[in-house]
Image 1 (cartoon, rainbow, N blue to C red):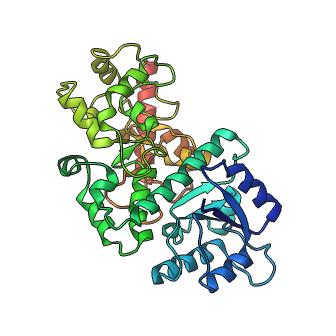
Image 2: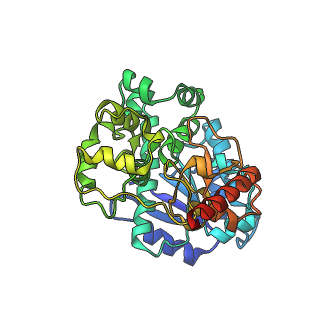
Image 3: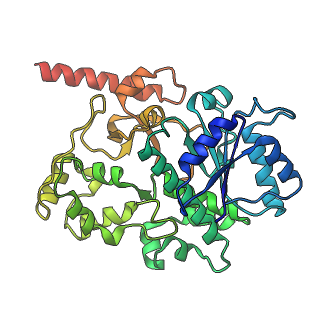
Length: 366
């Protein structure tokens, strides 16, 4: 079985992470020093199932390297086809990322995934990380097959792709003339909400508290037709976002789009067909009653998905241009006020929503 290589400057720590992420014949991870990785790369003798790259390699003896710098060297060699194609994943502690990269997004496109070391002593988080690594490896393996066209990769018919997919995504995918360039859009589609959504998103877009709803599994079963069945679908459990919206109107017969319904109406409509559903309560500090996006700041800081109503949330400017097939970014008012110095936050939105919140509180008090 091909091994993942963990490039790090702290051998003992790296070996512990490698052992923790390895799991029988599912995935094997092995530590390699930055010097050895650099030498193998220079000799065009570098091959792996994938590479986990620390951002800070300053403790390494000899020639100093940075994780993003070495990752860029790997991509150049893959572009020249002097080494095989394989995924490159940023793998570092959160404080090291802030210290070495901060808000600089210039290295983002080098990496297929970004996984933080923080919390990986927890087996649940380790298993989630394994799923991501195995999934992105599967994407690369499928792309290496000469007959792999977009529709077979995403598991849709031409008609379904026309309804649920994106011509812009297809253009981005087909522009790639190397495996890693074609993998980039596919992995982003799997990881970031847009064309696909995960179970947490599915629940709050339907207005349901899935943890409190005994009927949630029945509802999930009814949506099987709209589940993602393409490459790495076993590792990334997702649903086609536009498919769910289509189901809402065509199968449930709603006369209003799902996004335009508030939580009470969503639950009322669903309850005509499904039982034992509990309505979602919007988290404190997240205004509105039409949850559709998520709070980016909470995801960044606590790796927690908090739903937001876009009409009652603050727009967040991305650090680098985002493709149109990914959802725009938002933050809840409560979390934004705690991070008001973040330059990505739309200050006009913040002022507007503060006024709205004050007027709502005053009306409630009256």
